[in-house]
Image (cartoon, rainbow over all chains, first blue to last red; front, side, top):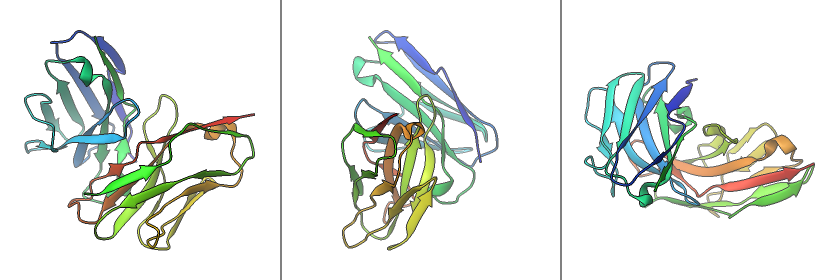
Amino acid sequence: SAVISQKPSRDICQRGTSLTIQCQVDSQVTMMFWYRQQPGQSLTLIATANQGSEATYESGFVIDKFPISRPNLTFSTLTVSNMSPEDSSIYLCSARPGWQGAETQYFGPGTRLLVL
Amino acid sequence: GNSVTQMEGPVTLSEEAFLTINCTYTATGYPSLFWYVQYPGEGLQLLLKATKADDKGSNKGFEATYRKETTSFHLEKGSVQVSDSAVYFCALSGGNTGFQKLVFGTGTRLLVSP
């Protein structure tokens, strides 16, 4: 199994600013993912981040708004840039140890973001 | 594209009551189906899974059967406990979504009172 931690756990930010969320895994993992969970909605995949390659973004999400880093096999960051109140959400980090199926995917506790 | 629909909550039950949380899906191909649980302040945890039609996933007293004819994967438990209070997410992966991307429902909050 993998234990995932995220920092910060929550934050309140002003519009127009940027926030970087850190995700740390206690073991080396191949695939890492970033999700958004807006109030009353399901989890939506933002992007997949594999070490050594550029992040792959889902439809509706762009690198300029959500730049992602994946410097090694245990760590990733997601930046929410030029924030607006519509970015208020829970952001979740997730990871899979290998190239196995989704049943091996683990999730962090989330970062709760409020943009004023 | 693939999608998951689950019943809205909150679902409020007394301890020892029977639980059903409905989940239906739309997918091409043959997806795998999952139930995740999120306890307060914690990350999502895999509760159970089923990978083919008529499979029954089970864990901690919870069960769900993969019904291809009705495209459903309803979650059931015979006797809930206060400690089962959480948000439950139905999800699928595979089918024709490439590398087995997870697609989630909106989540159902369960509240169990003593």
